[in-house]
Length: 507
Ligand SMILES: Cc1ncc(COP(=O)(O)O)c(C=O)c1O
Image (tube, rainbow, N blue to C red; front, side, top):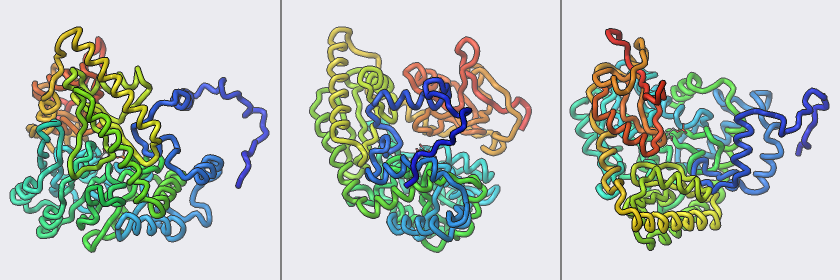
């Protein structure tokens, strides 16, 4: 093991407290807060690594940040240790071939699309896709054919796109070259894929799956079945989200004969850096190895922690927890809307009053990510905090009367989010056209030039090339007033919201 090396130059002698690097100091500040981390990444501050491995990793973190020097293999032409690590990961996750990604699932989504579709062709994509999907459509210059998700009537959130929607899309567009589905979604919903796989293959096209939220589901029988186990052709997973690798590290898997690995490798060579981070790659290797050795039991542990939290919360008046027979049980979705608390407000109260950070909030719900790296004490502390917030909200309601927030708010938002919008031009045309900035208020009738999406979850409300209308304005303003954060909107003078639109008369 390497000792900490000291360069010896006086020039490097700067005390940490005087080293005013804004980002680094902010991160150190976050560590000092000792927040309850129920957000990504899944390793929860390193607790997801085996202790001896974590120790070796931390001690050598700078020393193992290397490049393709002899013996270190090459991500873009792997034949040595990287290829061995990828092949072992493929076995663990049920793939024929696995590619490590150092630019997140985003790069994998782009690679899936660019591998399977050529300029001008059609691809069937879900309206509840993450914005990386439209990025791939823009890069490849495709025509998107949208399919629409069903909405859970009780929770107001997507349960995923039903197969009948893909049937409709393929009968209207038999020339589509691939279908893409997001599964499981942020809330852990995951439908059956068997008929969809068959449908795609009967049409002679591949099924691409954005399994960003499901790298762990293959490892345990109590979880929804993984896309690869159904026979999906390409599947991308954010290893950093629900397993334990470093942020930005993901895996792209392929299975079967429809996808040629050399073409995938070529696309990835275009989409990823020629200097991929060995730290990120090593963290994928560590996580995949851990899953090979202990995956089932670790995922079982996460399920047990999450089930216990669900069980405790289910007894608290006014609190609802999402539970379905088939779902990712590690996603803990909680609603206090019956106590008048919007999800955004619940998220803020947990953070401001209880030092507990959850992953996502919407109009009614919050989602906490539970992983095998969580301690029982931390999960208990999160539940205690939620119970306290619920008690306070109940007393506030008793004193102040009913809140304006109510059940149905999220379903209303979701309806807007997934509504078909009028398209004036293709996403790539709109992205590359001349742009100008417009006040959101003045933008109805204009062509949106950039994705506008609440983030997280990053599901676009408006896609480039779509026409902005009054209803978009109203829902954006309401969401922002409650605490939603949008990608694709900027704050202008006097707090006016600014949106990027295609310059009038240009294309
Ligand atoms: C469904 C989905 N797909 C893709 C992505 C992109 O993943 P990454 O952040 O690993 O690039 C995300 C990120 O949140 C996501 O939620």
